[in-house]
Length: 166
Image (cartoon, rainbow, N blue to C red):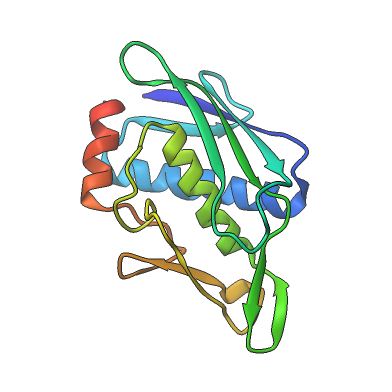
């Protein structure tokens, strides 16, 4: 099984918690679906460096990923940039988004780093819709008929990742 390290820069506790949860949940999902890669915080192997980027506005539901691959299409190194702050507009006003919301964004960018290019469905959607909860703990993002978290990958995404990581 291939190992990929995830190095967390000075990204704050909210993003640190979300990234750690994304790594845990993606690893479970990868094992369940037979995708032969494991992510590890500060682990060995090719590295995904995670930073925040003040140019990504906090109300946007995305990050930015730049990845370089080796000759076989597998990750050599990547940089994931996430918004400094995530906000969500609720009926009670604007507030910080919950860690689940951040986990979905981080996981989406990690999967891009692993070689998944197209935005097809579920976790890899081009556009997420915000679904605020009664509290930050209940915040979700929706895409392709799924509410995230928990994390999901479409069948197409699983096939694509297996073709890279098998």
